[in-house]
Length: 364
Image (cartoon, rainbow, N blue to C red; front, side, top):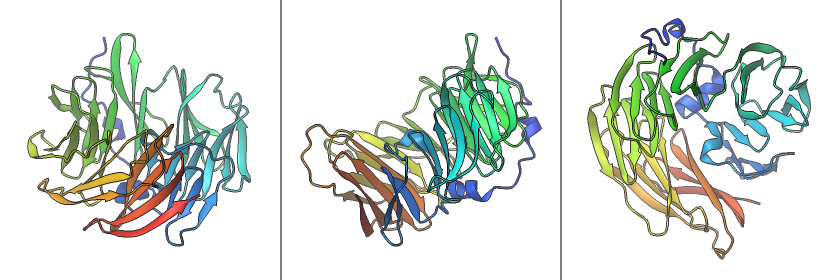
């Protein structure tokens, strides 16, 4: 058994200033481009550029942050127009045309088993296999740091802090690691296997099947909820949690600030909750097996009251043998809604204050 330590993140207390690439994800200052299916769409001109080797769809689990996406064997960084590609036993940093800055064999950097997770930041490319975690210097491709026997079941990077959860023996644990040099803090024991992790400037929240545990960013556990949640997100005033159709904002001490019941659109079954950079909440709902379009509902982040709701129409195609992935992103004063389906993809931009449609771009 592994005991919790008050000094969990003590050696990481001096977090470096926010990097430009990560600032896009933290502040809603996302680039005016977005990934949809196998293209990068310029939302200013409506021009879609097909990216060589880009296959697959962006789903919620593949969104690292606004401007950085995992799709297939690529990790794409829109801010720098670069990508990490894994191919034929090699890892390489390239521009969108496929011109490599550097290339390393996975065996050369010490990754000899199956990769499970990858993340790309301004300075590091973090690769995780079943047995090891390695961070490569983004400029040179050389190993900056590595940890053996440290597989990650979940991996979240917030500013210069890497938060991972894993299993040690029979215990479910969380560990924090400094992104720049790989310095580790002690393990802290969790009450269950982590299924969702949210990290903010004010702490770390870890949800398991039957609990939500919230920790101070640099130390002890603050409080625990005795139930699981369907979604979890950091909010400037605390923590957002969704259980079925109920969204709750808890303040930093765990006290309920507000609770709001969502609308229930018919025949839609996939909810995604987005905490915007202004503190408001946008929930998108779609059907993952039909051309359903996307239903959007926005809540006031201070009171939980509905600000607006709208239905974004689909493509109008038959529903047989169909699949559909959708996600949302906030960008300054707008919300981008991305719909990717068997018959095609499109991006709709909504005014964040009113929900009014500003543009709709097909991706062919």
